[in-house]
Length: 235
Ligand SMILES: NC(=O)c1ccc[n+]([C@@H]2O[C@H](COP(=O)([O-])OP(=O)(O)OC[C@H]3O[C@@H](n4cnc5c(N)ncnc54)[C@H](OP(=O)(O)O)[C@@H]3O)[C@@H](O)[C@H]2O)c1
Image (cartoon, rainbow, N blue to C red; front, top):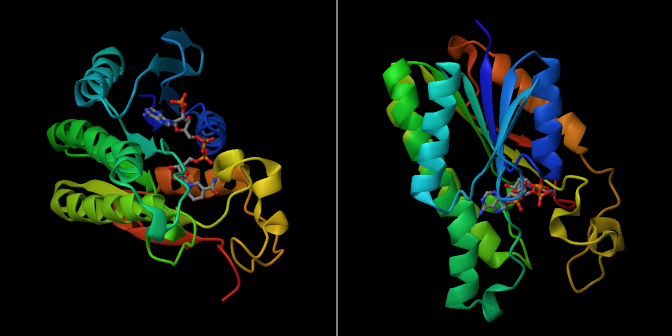
């Protein structure tokens, strides 16, 4: 029986690297984002879906199970970087950050948990961030939302583990993607305004995807609860 993986944020830099890695591991891969078309192909399928819409993500996950019969792994990569300092935080900027980075995760996990509970199996891999628990000078709303998502996924994981469902939180530092803006805003070109960053090599999306793919293949008895990868700046 083919293994089936579900990837949100699959049009993004990390999500598309995860898709490539899982396809190489011979998973059927279902890709989801707002900009992807509804489409089936040799690798699996893609669906247009906004994770902030609870009914839309639940319907999409139900459709995946209807078509493929089961779901083995879900990798949650959908997210948005929300710039801004704590001193300039507004309720609308916080709401925007919470909408995708927290409620998008809650909506997706709720639908997945229903399926994984019924199956009594499944692996849920949430892409968090080191910014969920490290000081992040210009990402207050993002860090707040990611910290809340981390707490939520941990709580859910605790509830699901006795059913044979794995939950893994992967917290990368900087990854070499345009997530935080153009190349001019990448760590090695950041100025005093941001913080005093090192010039350490960045983690590539492909290297991160390989780690995630390894977790996707681990047996339940060897599941990893949480891992931190790379770094944000010098200690
Ligand atoms: N890059 C980094 O340095 C870094 C570090 C640590 C953690 N992360 C985390 O890694 C994840 C992916 O980052 P990335 O660098 O690959 O960013 P990215 O290239 O901007 O990808 C973000 C993805 O999320 C999707 N997305 C955004 N809002 C969505 C919504 N409402 N519904 C459905 N999909 C939505 C986007 O697709 P559409 O626009 O088509 O919907 C895109 O596929 C994020 O969760 C981020 O927090 C990134």
